[in-house]
Length: 57
Length: 147
Image (cartoon, rainbow over all chains, first blue to last red; front, top):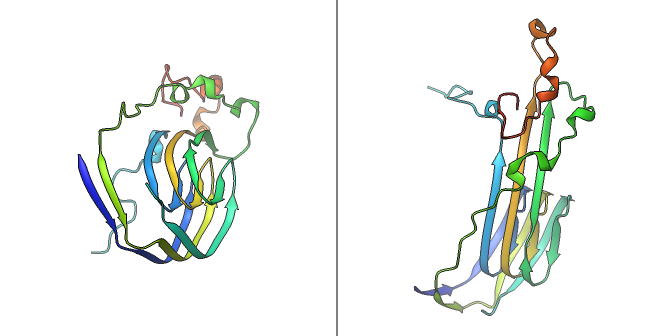
């Protein structure tokens, strides 16, 4: 595979993040290679089926 | 690959916890790993029985399916500006082997394993049969009913 990338410029005003957790990465900069893996097991009661907040008509 | 500079005018962080890294500068390799068991319990009274162990759950030992090999990529990158500019970057929490980096990272291999438990109070009707109290944190090869 051949790709050509042109980074013409990157200017950012504000970034606001609540939380970065569980081996996550917030990167301002360049990167060559990134491989991520995540296992997550949560109990069935944590899932809600259907809407819990009624949507406005 | 040559890397751009990064200009950040202002950064605001409230909390950096649990083996997290707030880093300014360049890195060649980062390989953060985190594992956690979260026990959320109705009544929030924790006893010896609530000290669950990683070794009892195979989510912490099973092999992750990493990509076998990277496909051959010929890439040419042209930086037309020498720097990335950011005015303000703010975060409240950085937790569990996470990284906030201003600068480049050549290679990142990150892994996270998390297991949640939710322990509810027994119904007042069933208060008599407390016999399954020790089975709250079942091994995974048994059942998931009490988790």
